[in-house]
Length: 275
Image (cartoon, rainbow, N blue to C red; front, side):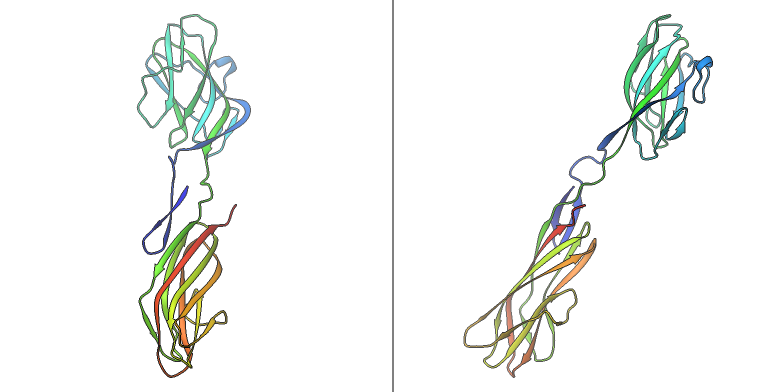
């Protein structure tokens, strides 16, 4: 998963590849089904007939197997035995049309014919088995299952915002710039603020970056003089997943003339907490 940026300070998590990515979980082999009546396992104890489709459940406990509800596919050995005519068996997820493909092929009277198959499951956790001709017994042994890969930790990102020129009056806090960060997961944001302050001689200004549009105890004081004063401040914040708004706020704390703020910018650098 990558983190991309959009206008307005939004961090958006987007999948970098197909959402069908899965990981394989091997298990101790277990018998899911055996249609032979003398060694029966599972819900069916008769062969699959010609042009017949049999549906088998996989998720939960079935036969001698227990497969978690998170599984999306299984890895199996599919064995056919006692085929009465030359035929083929097709195994596929039950909620899609039968594909033109074969999982096993055999001729009448041949010994047991095993075949390896990775079978995707239907949304209900089932697969279907189709026999073309004659009758045939089917044995399915599971050796593992597949489950979705969890989203990897997203990357960091950078966002930038520009505020309009502002005029400060003594005793009133003014938001000169703000930015919204939408974090896909909990993390850390470093916010850097800059501006040009035109402070009359004898005046002083306090500026602060915070998560509320007020001046607190973390402000930086600037004193006016003959030259332009460059505002520069930085602050870091732990953030939860979701939206956090950051404000660059200035307030004139002494003096009679009005202070002008120009070229005010915020840059937010987000880094996710690694899990």
